[in-house]
Amino acid sequence: MFEVNDLTKVYPGGRGIQGLNLAVRAGEVVALLGPNGAGKTTALLAMGGCLRTDRGEALWEGVSVTERPYPSKLHIGLMIGEPAPYPYLTGYDYLKLYHKLYPGIDEVRIQHTLELVGMTAHRRVKIKHYSTGMKQRIDLASALLHRPKLLLLDEPFSGMDIEGRREMAAMLRCLVTETGMSLVVSSHLVHDIEDLITHACIVYDGRQVETASLQRIRESFENVEDYYLHCVAKHRGGAA
Image 1 (cartoon, rainbow, N blue to C red):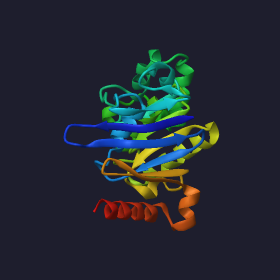
Image 2: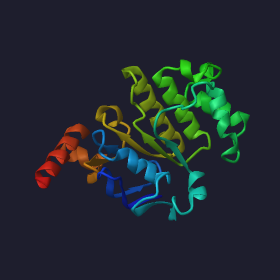
Image 3: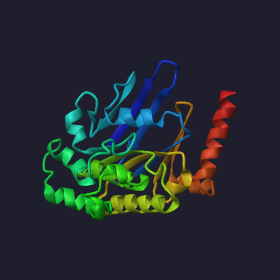
Image 4: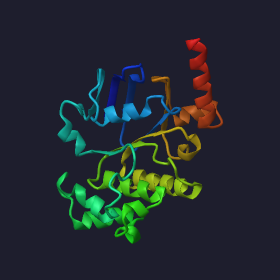
C-alpha cells in the first residue's frame, strides 16, 4: 500500500501543498483534482521522492520514498513534467536510456512496452516529430518500462485532442484492470478521468479540501464535476 501522511512542501511565496493525506491500495485510481497552481504537481513530485518535504512523508509498503528511495523507485513509475525531454532521440532510443536504471529491462521488455502504448510503428521516428499525444504515450512507456505497481501521472491528458484523451484513458483503464496497478493522477479536466477513478481528492489553494470514493460521491452527486464544485464552494465559504 502507498500512504501519504501530512505531506507538506511550501515554496517561498506560499505556493505548494500542505497537509495532504492519502492511502492508495492495489488497483485503486486516485484523482488529484484542482485548478492550475493548486499544488498537484508539487504533491506528485514529493510522493515520488523528487522533492524533500517540509513535513510529512510518502511511504511505499511502510518505507519512506525520500529516506530510502531505491526500494520504492523499483515499484513506482513517474510521468511528471514536460513529456519526452529529448526531442533528438527516437522513441526507441528514449526508452533505451532506461536500460541501466532498472534491473531486468531487456530488448523484449522495450518492444513489449512500445506495443503496450501503441508506439511500435513510430519507434524509429524522432520525438521532435511526434504529436503531443505521441509524446505522452512514449513518456508513459518510460514510466511503465520497469513494470511498476504504482504510477504517478501529472496531467496525462494535457494538450491532447478528444480522440487522444479517450485512447489514453482506455489504455490506463486496461493497465489497472489487467495488472492491478494503482494510479495517482492529477487533472483539472474532470470528464476525462471520471470513468477511470475509484477515488477523488480535491486540492485547492495548496490544501486537501476533501477525499471520497467514487461510490460515495455518486450517492450524493450526479457526477464528479458536481462534487468538485460543491467542495470548492464549501472551501471558499469556510475560508471567507
